[in-house]
Length: 457
Image 1 (cartoon, helix red, strand yellow):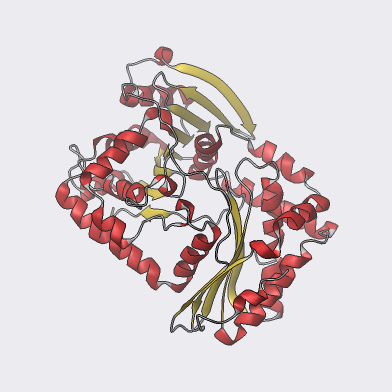
Image 2: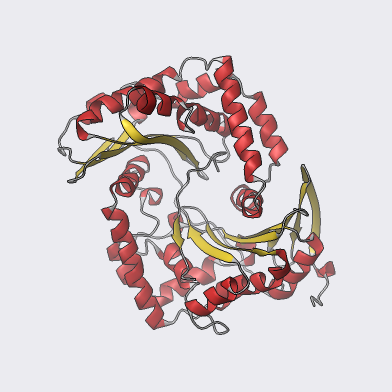
């Protein structure tokens, strides 16, 4: 996960006396100091991993279930099944038969909840006052293990998801983002829309959803991260009682490994819009790459915040765009660096050229004052995130489910402090290469416009 995340995922928005002791569980006392926040990890006998972060001075508690499956695991014929599955978990259980029953159960205690599907994981989360932890846990467990998958509800939700797909296609910025993903991961499941497509969603059956559930929703493929004003032993006791009998079987990753291959570098989709929306992108670095944090810092220099180079040059100095920013994605075996802007169509070429100039300048050492500024921005935003219980749970759980290793905030801050201007320049030299540039444009632009001739650094 990038340090300053602009990651995107498809989300379902809802309309919305522990007796067993933990001596049957395997307790692993992994503790990292995050100021006053400590996190601990326990692995239950069935392989379920439980992480807690104690935040004694706040009123909330956040619970996040991380399931190690996302859209890249979907077959071509069942593209979107991971996302469909996540939607259906909010449609009713035996205990809470309707989506309204589920919403009222959470909203009746003042809580909020949601779910999300990304390329490599699925999440279900709830945030409540810490006194209601047991209720929130019961609701999330109920959603994940006891959903009814009623055939009538499946058909209704199928139509809802198709409308979601159509809504995204009708939004020029979102459509352009879909197109850049297709160019970045050409011919690979990573390049598909997380929600699938109308044809695949139309044919996903109840049996396919249940097969997906049985194959991937296993304790050994699940991490539960809890952060807030709760104690580790109480959390583990509660989870052990509700999920200790959840049976497991080996889960083998069955996604297609990614290898970069030649493909188209430009996709223009003509639309009658006031702006031309475009994404300019290059392949990046994986979650496991030793220089991923250097790339994160490069991205902050480039396009994070109102003092970044792109915002200063493209918006403030040249007045070419209202909205412009960059972000990075780190995946299990791939990654990307992406820039978005929306501009007046007549300014499209000059805006692309101006952005490419800024990319080329990254191959020169970042001045000391600027480097210090972006380090402080990065560290400050990270530390501010750690004031929120859901962000803390996401920090620990996201690392555990994707990498199996949790870096503390202090460890990451130390990494950031150690990055030099030369490190950033070397990453720029390695990644910012003409042949790797991709461009997706949606707007009133001729589809045969020779924009690919601009893709030179």
